Length: 358
Image 1 (cartoon, rainbow, N blue to C red):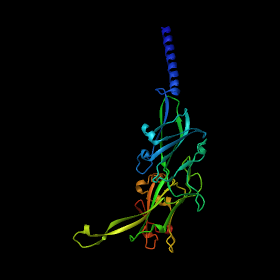
Image 2 (image 1 turned 120 degrees about the horizontal axis):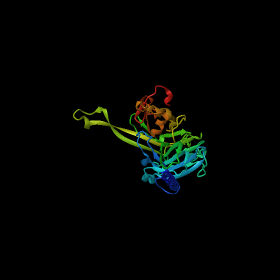
Image 3 (image 1 turned 120 degrees about the vertical axis):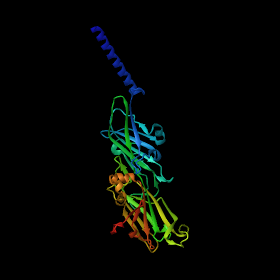
Image 4 (image 1 turned 90 degrees about the vertical axis):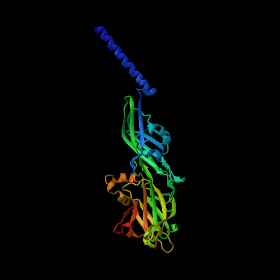
């Protein structure tokens, strides 16, 4: 009996040894039950709809994996179209260990001609400290820094710190929910009496220091950037005037309509970072009537529209989620801002009782 037990024990040990060797071969040489796989899943739900907009917005992906001491271990790129076949999972060809992962993703622009983003150092990134992304815009001929007068390709960022990748066989999934780093801002000017607004009598600009972002998604340089509109258009609409009714037989058909005319300026900026002081300036250039219409601190005013429904959202999270803003100012017949009518941001009316609106 002892002999039989001894033989059985040796058979089991040999079987386990062979199985381990087979698994080792499969881990490094092929796919199979004993393989180890690391997959990165990408999504973009950090928006005001709390829904995954990755398939609709992202076009390409760049991934950088760094060791715990900051050295580049691996980098790769892929298109979102190709990733869609794998439900937006990307395989990470890494050895077991602990890594910090940084992702930059690109998206479409609204215009064919648009500023792109470039990686500082190009393809020679060796460490995490080398990883910066910069707006590809020309120097500002009117002053220091850059001038962005075209639309900007959409940009998204995400990171995982200390992602542990075990050596045991299996499939390990890691999740990155992206942050959108570009903002669309529309400025609308209207006359209180509905008279047309001359687009040639106004200019618009936003100034900030957010032309470069580091691997943590914070601004990495104090270089100023000036954003100009990439489109200035006019629009008109007819609205019924409830205070003017001709006769009483048919109120609906006899109301006098009021024509509303607007000037609309479209701008795109880099990420709005709380702690920076991005400023929008609107100036009237009408000959003989030159003046400043408004000069506003964008972040302080944008945070006013959080509302009670979003009070649980941190300020920076709100600024990242709300990437689309419309600001409307009502002008008097002298092209000055009628402050008593307030400021409309995304249909929220904001009225301040002091002079800080300008």
